[in-house]
Image (cartoon, rainbow, N blue to C red; front, side):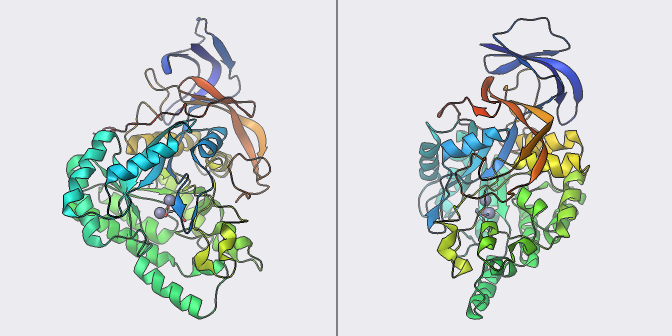
Length: 462
Ligand code: URP
Ligand code: ZN
Ligand code: ZN
């Protein structure tokens, strides 16, 4: 099967030109001006942007968490991703405590197989790391799971101590693994949470109040220092605030391989949005939490200046009715997480490109090319070049779109962006050359997404 995308404005992280793209056997095989070639399918992209498909490197599909399970599975979640122009994602597999990484990988592969409509990879969440398990990190690299997440938060659930992190980082440095850090000081937060509850402060906003920005700043600094001592690269996930950003900026200024992502929720919401008299604030309960509004411009500047390299969603959806309301009387029982897998390209286009905070090339870079490079998928993914996978989005910069739970495809009963108007929308989405979304209609098939065997860290940087 062959496809020709004609007359589009091809925008990559570096380039911007009018051209045609010819696709055969799932790959881009030819790019040129006014290609004189016949194809089984022709897509006219005149007046539209043609970009590499979005890559969301932080999702939690079908994940047991906080006494319940995230409400999108690998079918509904990847379908929603496709509607939003995301054609690859990396989800987090969890090592069952005391068991092998392979057990965790098998559980998550079984969740995805037969369901995913776009390509997917996995990070491995390390919950314990006795010496005899260290070699399993190398096994994961051989499986194409080349990044690991460790938590400095959630004591007794996911948190590990500094010695474990240091051990993981030292081994990561020797095998080309990338350590991803959830950077919040969990012990301090637990103490503040106990005080807050004892004082009878139980509404949703108290979740955010009890997790101060300084607890994220301290943990970010510690994670970077541990990585420096271990001689390892480090990637800070879901960075929210200037306290943490400054530590990443300082590390990068010293030439350290420190990377960080932020998420749309931190660019568009602040703690003020949680402070409602009803339970609505629960829709915005996630960790790390929302910050004071002034942090938003710092994050946008961080994206522009490359202190932050990636926007990922941390998509971890829980329904308002039946899940978030488990914590109606006590914020500590609200499952942590929010939905935005479908909204990332829209939001960063509106807030970034339309509002002139970042360039069009940078929009492509933070949503697709940089995540592909950092996580060992480039140039197969994140690129429009001969030989790369034909994961392509035709984007209409003039189409109007309104974000709403009524029309979104995520399996969750609310939107964090209800009613928000966006100028710019997905027109057509191709996953390895096959059209999976067109004219707002789903044309994909459950199970057609494949596991992405990722390369070790460094392959795109050396
Ligand atoms: O609140 C969040 N972020 N839930 C998902 C788990 C995590 O820490 O990423
Ligand atoms: Zn996290
Ligand atoms: Zn997460």
